[in-house]
Length: 259
Image (cartoon, rainbow, N blue to C red):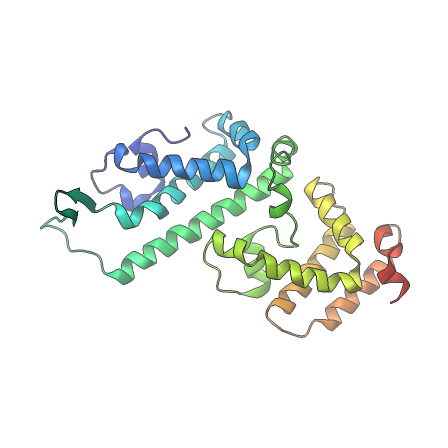
């Protein structure tokens, strides 16, 4: 386990540092968080590779933060509940005023947002670090997390200003984003989009591809918020047309032949 003590947990979660909390009270949430990150997000091979890094390694520290944030997000609604012979009760302290529903919701949203930002950081470093990239590609869901022009929630928000607070919400809009990319492929070609994303997956993106990817993020973002995107699409097509050596997939595609 990456998190084995209440001190580790409280060092990462500031709002949990001012209360007397036994690690056993949150251990199940921590274990569930580790399983979620291992099984659904990173895959066992990558998770173990990060787990074996030194305790001062920034990627390992980032993963520890993600574990604590996920655990806290799921634990918040239950931390003051205890089971009695008559059902459930809420733990009270006469020296403390119960938090309002609005403040608790803000705390939950803050936790979800920080978790999403932390997963963003993990995605970037795991994609760009050759050793970690190799381990991540063994995960069955690797292509799912890398098949959009937006690798991270932060990128998506930059180009759309959407009201997406957490990682699960970002994951939920994947279908819509892929649908927009499919529409875009009529003009860019699916072959070129696939080649671009494959090069990014393998950390082999050329400067020309980086520029094209910026075009595509802008276009898909505009499509998502239903803004005019034809001028940017024209710029992207002209850019690919004038650089046949860099965009061979596009020049060999049907989209190029009929443009």
